[in-house]
Length: 323
Image 1 (cartoon, rainbow, N blue to C red):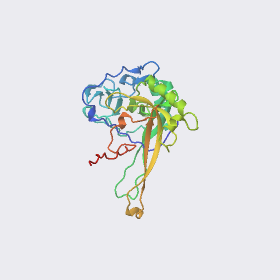
Image 2 (image 1 turned 60 degrees about the vertical axis):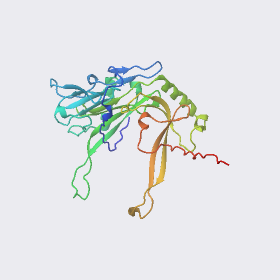
Image 3 (image 1 turned 90 degrees about the vertical axis):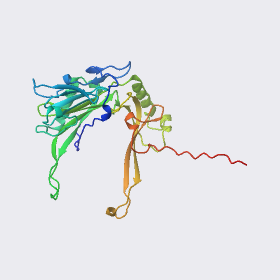
Image 4 (image 1 turned 180 degrees about the vertical axis):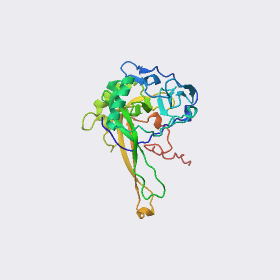
């Protein structure tokens, strides 16, 4: 479990589309059962958390709004999505408890600790809360940085480390479960400053298909499965994908052969490079199921750009010429 030190800025965005009635009742706190042969999930709760919304004995409000059940105190908000069980907890930054908002991650004193120590503390915390140990494939730290200065400064002030967030990497057997989330930010006293937990149960079919995919692509040479994929793609890896916590509608999970494809294209010209065209590099993760069919995750079905890969244009149909 290593520490990766790179800039990390996180803001929780809760879509207005979450407003309205919940689609499904969330599970009870603790382990979430799956079908026979599947993998259990985990439902976080305030009772299992070290997040503190206020001092002991301080009045707290409990409300349901915008699709979330919230416990609001003077020091923070603990919110649970009534549709899928996503938990988001964040400090209120000293604002009035009625104005505390999910997504406020303002830095405070006492957050800076060693990233490796932070990783270990967060790992122990989530294990004690109830996340299965055999589903944790690793943990890595990301860094909160800040800098200040004026527009007149010749150079920006050196960045200052404000703290860390440690992210668990989920796996089932040998397969990464890429879309599951459990991260926390803790202070020197071991209290949780902010956290995000979404760890759904995985159905048996997704796990069985992952095993089949691993067998089909396990050899180093060409296989029948790889031959069915588009030509020229790099090697990929077998993972389990599922709907993200921000997606409305029915939950979906499937085994995927994920391939990271890097594409280059000519960009606009400019005076700064004396007329030479920029090279634009785009990275796309493509998903292929156990049958070799390309899939999109529910969170990828809506986008502002064109379909990828682009759909083939059909030639216009012409009517026969009358004679």
